[in-house]
Length: 116
Length: 114
Image 1 (cartoon, rainbow over the protein chains, first blue to last red):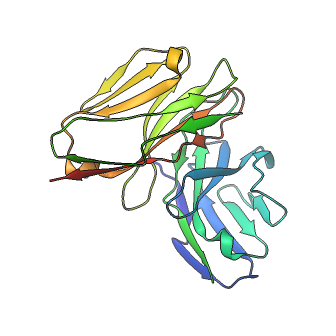
Image 2: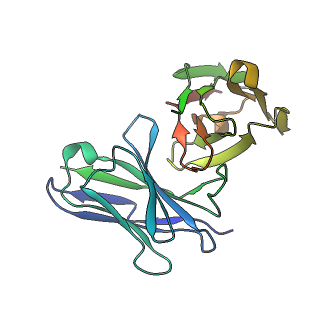
């Protein structure tokens, strides 16, 4: 069964460093998402991506964040200068279509980011 | 604006008891979609169900059932004869018209005691 994969599973970094979180969405999916979950809290939407551009972003997704689909399979989230409060689990998700909303999003296993 | 409220932060039940997890939502969209996801201790998010706003039919899948009531803006989830493997955090989520991003509730941590 196809699945979303994410690497690494755990990333530890120093405050101020840049990190890139990687995701491989399901191959025939067209819409891609990043969410984050601070420990013990709810899952929060960061950004959606379609046709090589951002579709929507939340107020969390500020200038420190960027997303990219560098090739036909990977979807990355970059945090330019990490802060302590960026420590969270980051989930990638993909869905076949997003035009009408409501399609099931398939989530990856997450990358736990720890900023020291 | 979309909002999902899960008032129950934590619930503990003894194995084989039935348990209902509450979800109340707010949206101005006439077409919207509701979801339940399970997050076991391992951390991944497991899709359980999707329901669109035009379909108020209740659904049953094995020990799981969902009660969607538009009149009260609720989409409650019942587990019958709970098992230890049901122990997890359960999230209710909402997406609106034209946008697929999910708005999650704060989750309900269910502990099933053997």
